[in-house]
Amino acid sequence: MPEWLRDAQWLWWVGAALAFGIVEMTTLDLLFLMLALGALVAAIVAGTGLGLLWQVLLFAVASGLFVFALRPVALKYLRLEGRGGKMGIEGNIGQTATVLEPVSDRDGLVKLRGEDWTARSELEGQTFATGDLVTVVRIDGATAVVTAATPEDKPFDLEPPTM
Image (tube, rainbow, N blue to C red; front, side, top):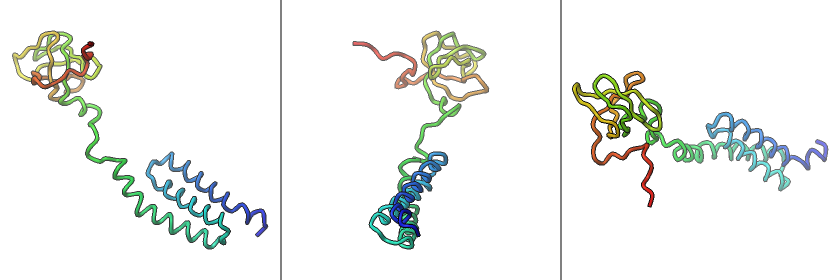
């Protein structure tokens, strides 16, 4: 092996770590990040002057430890499965809306999470006047089905009071 290549082995490992980092940015699975960390360990080993066999061996061991020990812990704290807020239509259910145009069991208009939605009341004969607060119980197509808001509901779209 040429001397210039032997002296720059650590640089090759840093390059590999950067390549793994770039791939990680496209996958966001933390697997290639763990391989990048293993490559950095190998770069440190290469900087101490140990041979290529030791570098590859320590890269494999360090990467394996990172994948099987560090990655599950990191995923646990980054993914928060089951604890995240609901998105899309499911995120609107249970939200408080402000009535913009009177709502009956046939039609109406509410402001829900900053957007105007067509709305109708859940119960037949139930009506809400402009300015009333209502709670979304379900979404039918592009229509929010609403009921009376409980007293502890806070409007999403109202500005906080100024002092």
